[in-house]
Amino acid sequence: MNPSRRSLIAWMGLASAGCAGVPSAIPSAIPSAMPSAIPSAIPSAVPSFVKSLAPTGRLRACINLGNPILARLDGSTAVGVSVDLSRALATQLGVELELLIVDAASKSVEAVSGGGADIGFFAVDPLRSKGIAFSAPYLLIEGAYLVRQHSALTDNAQVDRPGHRIMVGKGSAYDLHLSREIRSAELLRAPTSPKVVDAFLAENADVAAGVRQQLEADAARLPGLRLLPGRFMVIAQTIGLPAGRGELAERTLRAFVEQVKASGWVARALARHSIQGASVAPAA
Image (cartoon, rainbow, N blue to C red; front, side, top):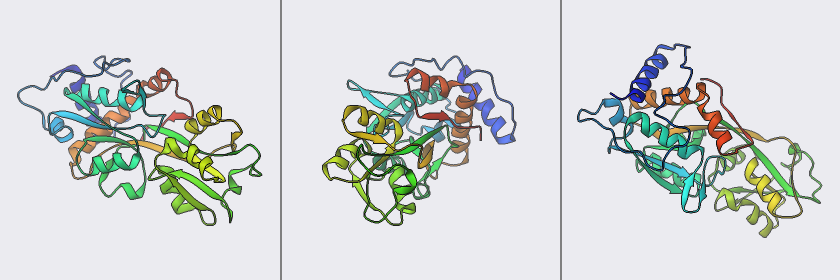
């Protein structure tokens, strides 16, 4: 058995026993800059925990480009924290990695809940829990509002008023949250989160809602825009797998997430990709 798999099994034991101890560093088999593919190291007798997470012999990871904090395209290659985490998990399982690239959270939900992918990267939301089992959060991301420079709005609390129209990415965590919380304003929906600001301008909406980093990039790209101070929500980002994979798969994933948080690996990934507006989630 390779060292990284032994480490994961050890972590599973700690997690199931409720032990507070954590290793000082993530196993050396998970490098800080990982290649685009990791060769299979599955032995002839595949452990049941590997089969539970990667039943096809590959770890099929769905990568959503709709959240720039987690992933983006570098040319034709997907890069980012979620890509690195997928490679790290595949390394620990000793299997090859297969990436399924989508442009919206709703497509990632469909892929994982339908069994077309083994893992995906999601904001926790009750509507998504019907077909997906979530790990504890590994990352916390701020949701923010953007307005025109001349807008009379100066505070998040002023947004939910009659006559205001809020543009949000269809099916995103922000859409799900605001659909429950907004009482007086009207919600408008762009096809994906990266297209929110363009749709906000095209439809003359009053407010754009989304990932702080995406909105900051759009405000720098386009003149006459500003963000409202503070945040209207904090999103807990998790790794999810198809519901029904069983307790063994869920325990394996939970152990992996706690390991990469406690070791400082997630923090280093954020720094490596120059990500701001996100922080490592506390231990579960």
